[in-house]
Image (cartoon, rainbow, N blue to C red; front, side, top):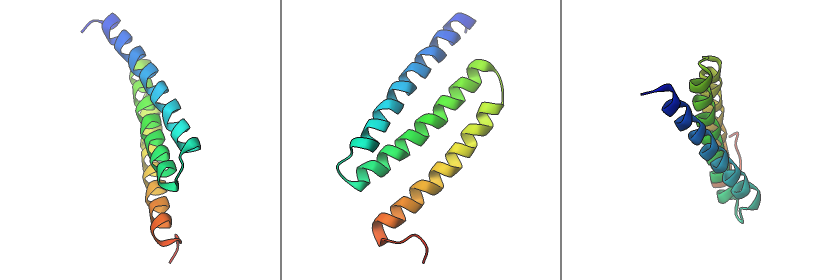
Length: 93
């Protein structure tokens, strides 16, 4: 795979992930129900995580991969706690 094709593919991936992040933000802000907002946040953190991975591939540094792991863990914890709050109405038992 030539460097030109790889650079073009990574640029296209970053653009599409940026659009996906904007749409997820729109769903988070606009969602009529709390469940829609939680799904919007879930999509947003996955999109941000993938954006960091693609940026790390493009720049050739490991910092972005570590940051994407942190985003993934924090996003998972946030999604679980918000789902628990929506089901039970409390987070801490």
